[in-house]
Structure formats: C-alpha cells, structure tokens
Amino acid sequence: MRLYPAIDVKDGQCVRLKKGLFNEVTVYSERPYEIAKGFEEAGAQFIHTVDLDGALKGHGVNAETIKKICSSVNVPVQMGGGIRTLENIQEVLDLGVYRVIIGTKAVENPDFIKAAIDRFGAEHIVVGVDAKDGLVAIEGWEKVSDKTALSLALAMKDIGVQTIVYTDISKDGMLAGPNVEQTKILSDKTGIDIIASGGMSCMDDLTHINDAGIHGAIIGKAIYEKRIDLKEAVNLFESGASYSKASAMPKADISFKDLKLDANGLIPVVVQDYVNGEVLMLAYMNEEAYNKTLETGIMTYYSRSRQELWVKGLTSGHFQYVGSLDIDCDNDTILAKVRQVGAACHTGNRTCFYRNIKTWNR
Image (cartoon, rainbow, N blue to C red; front, side, top):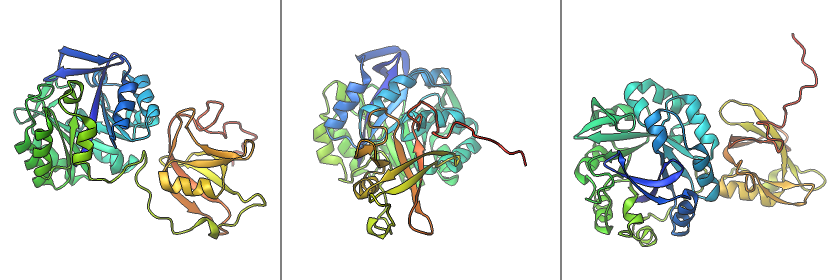
C-alpha cells in the first residue's frame, strides 16, 4: 500500500480543516517545505498537497509555496486545488508537481479529463472524488452535485483515468477512521487505483485500508497530532517499490558503449518539450550522466566548462523529467523529450533558442 502524507496549504501555511470547513482551520507550520522534507526523511515515497485557497477560488493561489515544496524534496508530489483548465495543468506541472488532481472539472465536464489525459498522459492526471453522504461535492466542497461517487468513478475509468483520490468529507480532519466500506466498493467496482482520504487516525485504520486491498491512503492530521508515526507506517505498509520524481524508467535497449562519441567521450543531447515539441536546449552526456538519467528519470548532463556532472534543476529547481530518450540513425545524437519545470535556459527564457537570426516567409 502506498502512503501519501498530506500538506494542505492555505495562505502559504500548512493547515488542516475539519470536515472541509474553511472556518475550522488549524495551522501546523508556516514553512510547508520543511514539513515536506520531514516526510521524505521519514521514508515517504510520494507527497500529497492541496492548494485550499485555489480550490475555493477556482485558480492557483499558493504557487510559490507548492514550487518550494517540490524543489525541497526528491520524491514526487501530487497536487489538487483550483485546477480547471489545461493551462492550469501545465502551470502546475511547471512548478515541479508530478501529477495533478482534478475534482470540480471532472464533474462539470468529463471531456476535459479526456483532453487532459490525451495531452499530458494518464500518469499525470488524477481525479478527486470528494463525497458528502455519497454525493460528489465540488468547488472546494462548498457545493454538492447530483452525481454519486461510484457513478463518477466508473465514468472516469471509462475515459482512461488510472487513479482516483476518494475523500469522505464527513471524515476529513476528524480522526474518526476512514470510510473503508465505500472506498473498497470504489476499488472493487472500478479495478483502478483508489487512494483513501479522510479520517485516518491510527495504525489500525491503515491496517483496515491495507487489508481491504486498497491502493493507497492519505494521512494528514494523524501525523501532525502524532497519532501515526510516518516512519513506522512506511516500514509496515509500503510495498517496497521505490518511486523517483519521474516514472520508473524502463531498461534501455541501447547501452552507452553502443553510442558513437566525440573526441572527448561525449554525446550531444537535443532536448525537446514532451508535450508541444518545442526545442529547449542542447547539452552533452558522458557515460555517468547517461546512466544516471536512466536510473533516476531526471535529465543529467556533463558540463564541458566545469568538467563535472550536472543534474538539470538541482540548483534552480528547473528539473527536466524524462518522457523518452531516442537515438538517431547514426547513433551519435540523443533526442530527449522531457517535461520541463520552469525555464530551460539559464537566462530565464523557456528555451535556449529564443534569438532569431532570420526568418524566411515561404
């Protein structure tokens, strides 16, 4: 079972709500990124975040806080709250978030979810199903729709959704135990990954979720109130499969010895945006950089000027997560398609190729 320690962000602070009520707020930290680092140190393999202000207002509000959380850890982060357009999704992914959670829009416009999956890939799109008395709530839980949680989950499965976060709002922040029965129904009926959210209060609750065969559990207040020791929970319940910020990279069909290198033992790498095809930069790899990229799923290069290994984004936070690596017909140039966080160029421009020499209108 995968554990997702949670950081809910409101006004730049780490908080928890009771039953989703914005007037029932407890502040746990003014530095959410420090909470994230603590989760990683405890062994968490994934971190769950919510922009609570964004969920209420319908657009991202705490972008800088989320970005700092992502750049502070080396495990993937998922985020929900206020994501209503494809542009919102791109903006959130650019912050360093690995996958986004979409709630309101899934209810209002299922075709939007399909479009998001087609553009960004199912691995980066999660649907949030938040229910009050079995009916799906939207817009920061302020409104209740006429759709049942199960009907929405089945509809999402049909359009390609692979993961759903299910929250029983009556349980959220109450430390009263999760709704195992309803969560198991969603898991059994859909056959996709269901992440249980709301009410986790003790190790027994996690045991019940685990024994029900449910994919994962989000833990929030129980960690902050020291009812669940995250390190102990990770040791007991995690499957042992380690995640990196990018998806686990498949074994490469071509080893470095198969490549044709320049006189310095390097190979050029053309870097392209995985989504829109924009050419971002040109860099070089030696054998160590090549192998590290395959191992971590994060683009790593060899700096010819500094003569050292260079993990793109390690200093700036502008990581490049590998979508695919291809080799040309002569085996002497790599094409890397990546999900770029922020700017690729050290000047702050999205691409290094931002200066035009001449354009022919033909």
